[in-house]
Length: 289
Image 1 (cartoon, one colour):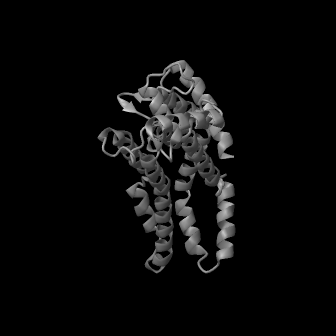
Image 2 (cartoon, rainbow, N blue to C red):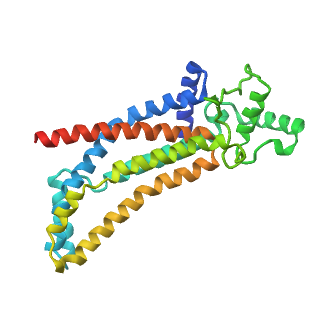
């Protein structure tokens, strides 16, 4: 299934590359295009987050009211979700899409000759063998053999070759892998920018207003501290989970070609802009209500 999506993404990326003649620029345009397609889902997700913030107080009241009666609590919470038109499992769909995008883009960036240029395996293998005979066995990366082929063709300046991809972007070679090129400090520029943008994105998502926290605490008495502790633990778990995907992505970006880190970085920048705009729109709607 991942190969299927990687093939589709590769076809679109190659079409953009033919127009702009630069791999990095093609990835940026591709990122914007994917975000535009995903915009309706992002709006729906943002609305759900806002609604969830809104019903937090009611949920805590229900937890206190139906202490010791989990069946009644679950029923009341489901009724609350129905009244507010919130799907409690709606976030799962978004997570699945993110995982598919993550893996598909990793496959695509790892093997651009296969998924982007649509070159058959025999032709690629023949070129790999040719390079090995000329430069030795270790001239081809075991993890990213196609990137080694692209680097070889770039170094030979074989621009007319069907395997040629212009990987130079703002002085960076997007075929490089930070783990394999750690002696070159430039390979860490995009991963570092990606980390910074991830932190900003998470802060925007998990930011909780102190006023709301005080209001929540005011609803409970001392004897309800246990229930509040459980609610806080659940909230803390949700925050921890929100960090898991970026941490996983950062780890992958250090062992993958720079093109993948560039895609994630651009994706984060667009996401930050999107969230700022949507937050303002939804805040305006709330104030009008």
